[in-house]
Length: 365
Image 1 (cartoon, rainbow, N blue to C red):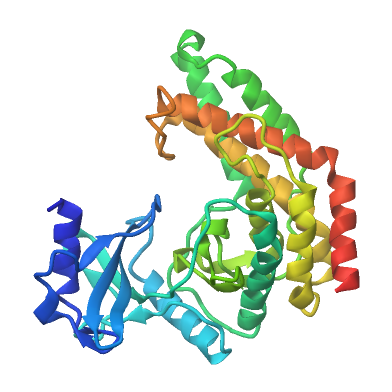
Image 2 (cartoon, rainbow, N blue to C red):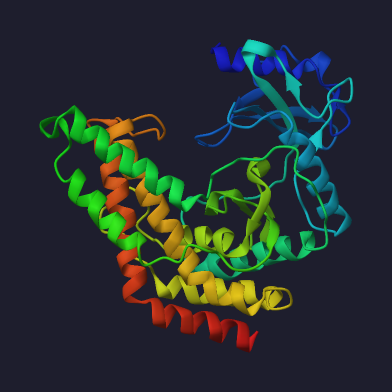
């Protein structure tokens, strides 16, 4: 048995029941726990216990040290609020001694959350566009009246200037180390990112709202008919400007080629149904200044991510890389950075038309 599965089984011993089924008598079953999904942040396992109604299921996770254990107080507060608003959501299952999460020292921080049957997808499709937008708007509407002080705060995640400065430092490091050791094209790439960044306003308009913080499509759950069920992976919940929350979603959702291509583009054919799905509920609370910033927000996030990938060409300290497809972390991050730059150029070329689609969606909703 792998270290991860051994640690997962040890963590599960601290829990009493799952969906009313007692765990202890079933702990020795080899099929009790198996890896779930391919997430890059947390180690995730599906727990299945036989019950009178079939299988009782839960999700067991070893939480990345990036997130402090206090994040579970935030998850608990917001998911319980979502339940009061009658939205489906995974919730934390308390340990035997009523803790929201379990700190096993060198074996990490573990948690159990309820399992919601359904489907996740790795790429946006036309069929998912409207329900994805609608689900996200329902979430934002449900938490719009919640006042919550976050116990865990990620600082600098959307500090645009800090990411640009990190890239400047990477350029200086490359020059000091010796340009002969710098990957070809890096300095030209960095110059292009700085030039593009100058087109983005420094301030993001609108109020701070409770947001999910990482709306990539595989963090949304859908039912068999393709309707949106709930949001997953709630560690990134935070106060955030809506233009950055939705900007990141649009950047990701409207890029049909993904982040490992240098020819990425912004697909207006996906943008339009996403906006209509969101605006049906979102028009009730989205302000004019937030609405008018959505495409600029997507551009800002795209340039920011290009800067992060480009800096890691030199630093090689943050992003994982696919060793089966790329000879090095630097090579993979160069493709990622060039892909985001290509996406940003596509956004700029279509910005006026994209903003017209935003206006049309919110006007007709």
